[in-house]
Length: 139
Image (cartoon, rainbow, N blue to C red; front, side):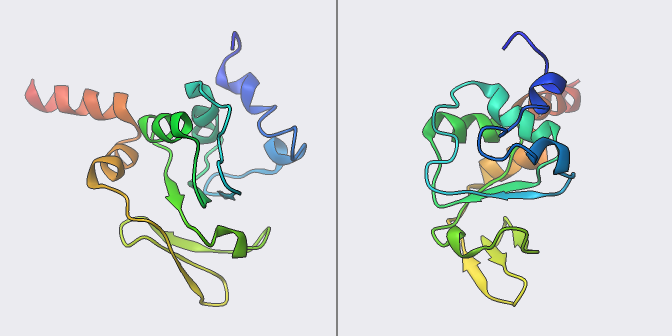
């Protein structure tokens, strides 16, 4: 953890997908299995995904600390019990407000609702940005 996000990003997810850091593009979505983020108690685990431009992570559920850190850094997590139905490389769209993921063929997968508080954190780019914005409006 002595390295910055640029260095960490070069190694992101390399243990399971060595090409990930070189191939990921801003706006990409990660579709993952259960307990995504387990063992990732440091904020950098979520921050590096934001740094790489990941638009969202879709998984059936998340490790607790990763879930909290992700929203605090502005990373959208969609909890979708049927995430495994999405195929690798499939083009999808999602709407965090309505809680739906639309597959390329038109099938709609339901996600668990996200509270307004957490959606606001994502829209503001994380907790620190949200606090800065609030301080500026009070000044």
